Image (tube, rainbow, N blue to C red; front, side, top):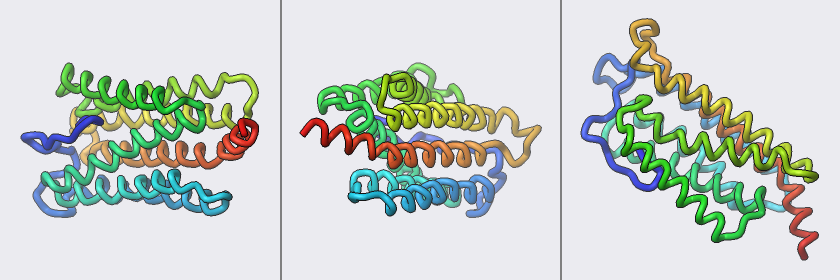
Length: 233
C-alpha cells in the first residue's frame, strides 16, 4: 500500500486470525475498527463545542470514521473493492492531517505544505519499493511515523505559543502509540503460533488512539491559531 497511489496486490494480505473464508472469520480484526469510530465521535464532540465552525477539520473527523468503516468492510469481506475502500480513507487522512498541521500549526505556506506532502509520498513509495515484504506491509507507514515525530518535535520545542507546544507534545505521544501499533502489525503472522488470535487487532486499537490524539490536538490548538490570525490582520 502506498500513499501516492493505490494498487491492489496480486494476493490480498493474510492475517493470523483468519482461518476460513467466512465473513466473520476475523472477529477481533473486524470489531477492533470501532476504535476509529470512537475517535471520530470524540473529535466530533470537541468540534461541536468549538466556534467558529472549522469545516476542513470536520472533513478529517469524517474521514477518521471512514477509515473504521472501510477497514471493517475489508476484514469482513476481503476483496479488491473493499481493499480500495480500506486504503483510500487512510491515504486521505495522512495527507489531509499533514497539510492542515503544516498550515495551521506550523504556519507553513502553500508551497512548503505541498512540498511536505510530495516528500512524504515519495518517501513512502521508495520505502515500499525497497522493502516490499518487510514489516508485513507496515514499512509503508514508517515515513508517516517519521513525519509525526518531526512535526511533534518541531512544535513542542517552539518558544511561546503554549497551545501549539501542547499540540506538538500530543503529536509526539501519537507518534509513540503509532510506533507501538506498527510493532503489533508487524508481528501478527510471525507470532501466530503463540497468539492464535493474532495481533492485528491491536494495530487497529492503537492506530485508532493515534487518530484520536491527533484530531483532539488539532481542535485544542485552534485558539492559538485564531490568535495568530488576528495578530496578522
